[in-house]
Image (cartoon, rainbow, N blue to C red; front, side, top):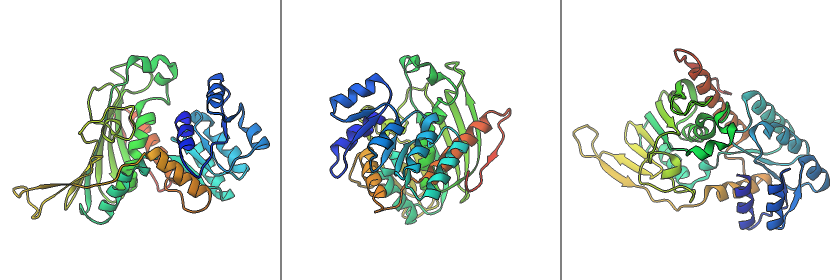
Length: 335
């Protein structure tokens, strides 16, 4: 993601990439190829040539230290998801940014996809009525060579933490806060220390119920990656990843199909209404938003608090799945 952010910044007007910070030889070589200054350590950059803002795409366990260093220097930050390795670290980072009045954004880039803004507008306008039920599917197959990096089969690297956090953030954005979860997971297919499959029941503050199924061992088209067409690295399908059902209609995402009946009733005709939206790269849109937030032109769309709440739901899912039988985990407003 660091490389992708760097390439995105270089392609955007009104924002300049001034430095890369990464101790590896590979990163230094990449900095040379794009003619950007390189530092091995963040403190050296902050002391020698502080920029106007910093994108933190380092390993999760370093987000807190890197974030605090930037906040102490008064620099706005965009922190890749998850905001931190755990809730305690995330809360420390959020509170430090709030106390210092420094902009803190979290890299849940999918919220910046124009189709998400359109979906949010439709729901808020009452197009589907009151939300009753939600379902999200995240089925994909990670090949064996993906796990040649041993850490990907170890705690903290399963699909719940790496993949599902994006889906949870979008469901919160569209449907409201999650108040409780019940979850079950399994590592029966690959036998790694972390799950390869999970099923989650969500209860939302507005009374809606949601179900989520997740697996990185299923060959299938039902995942955001294969349906949203926002990353050319993934094949695009016509399948749906999310179904959001309301009292007056339903929404199919990310294809943005609105289903409704002129007269409600299970024997009445039902109509499909595609909703047009101009596509845009959410990574680029997120970076432009970071520029504006860093300059004080706008409030963060995905603030530190938002990142904290999405991480809290993920941790609740992990806690529930760790019990036998799975026990409900209740979340408060701050996660």
